[in-house]
Length: 295
Image (cartoon, rainbow, N blue to C red; front, side, top):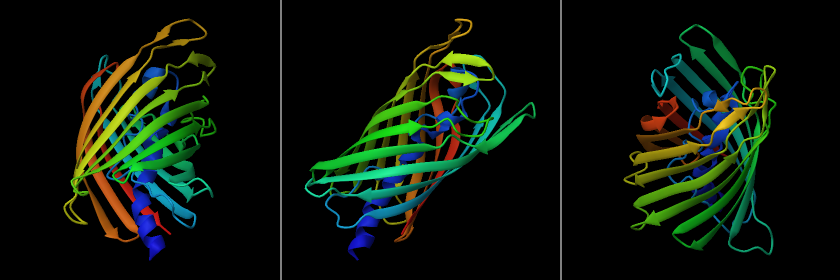
């Protein structure tokens, strides 16, 4: 019974992987990378509500799925594109003896992506694998503070790899308000993009700052409406061969969705997000789903 309770409490975290995972879709320039999703925009209800002082390590298997249809842009128009992403992640939670009120996890991600364009050019294959580490604590019972390091390994399929070793550091928080009826999850992160070698070109990719917010009203196991707000600002980059500038960009999107508990061991979330402001990037138009199996 204890293990089941712990798994239920922690299982909402692990969709945190996708937050940056679409960075693996960057091909030749940073502006193309900006056409993918905002880092960590897949967080949902109780994403960062993690337990402390649990007795045994816990294993989780998670599946994330995204479909995005891009038909317009903030800035110069490009080809209409459709992106389909399916990702699996394994995460292991544990404690360290002598370090009270803290929890830890390591995580690994493998996934498949497909990109289609109006010109008929299609790309598909394995995205860049990723690994991460998270530490968290509860300063007070209603607040969980998490700290994550994430690394992107440039070993995906030729069509989809970013061809750059990148890193991200993120501060993540969960607040339980009004006896848990209102839940607020939010994060603030910085992605450090390594130099890219793609198709004979060398690019210096700009870093980006991002934040994501989810506010949820908890009604019952099946109905928990949520509002999502995601923002990213990316620095300018440049071609290391020609010196040409790769444009900086900004984007803001909002969404609405629902979280539900199908069984004690199966959770399902879905939401729709739409871009409302931006610069030099595609306009978001995406449906997200999350499945979490605990075992």
